[in-house]
Amino acid sequence: MIPGPAEENLPAAPLLSVVKGQPNAEELAALTAVVLSLGAGENPVPATAPSVRHWVRRHQLRLAPTPGPGAWKRSRG
Image (tube, rainbow, N blue to C red; front, side):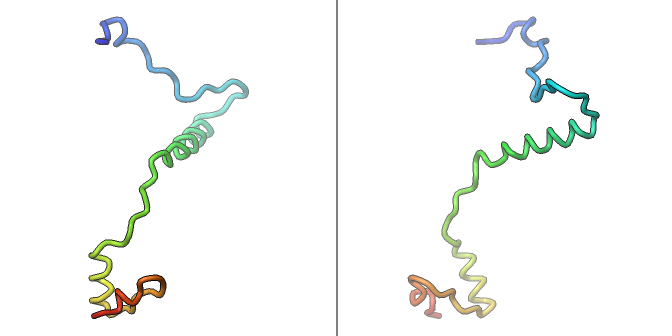
């Protein structure tokens, strides 16, 4: 649906609403920062295997492969 001229001038719904108390500007800013930071974890970056670049860097620094399953495959060099 395409918004008409009357709908474009309407203010957006408030993000927060204070229902009790009289917070000052600093308290509202702190509250807003906390609420926005809580929403930041909605799309976490999925954990992936280390890239080839990681292993090349380890080889250049002459770092031993980390122990664990499949370490013998990475020990060739």
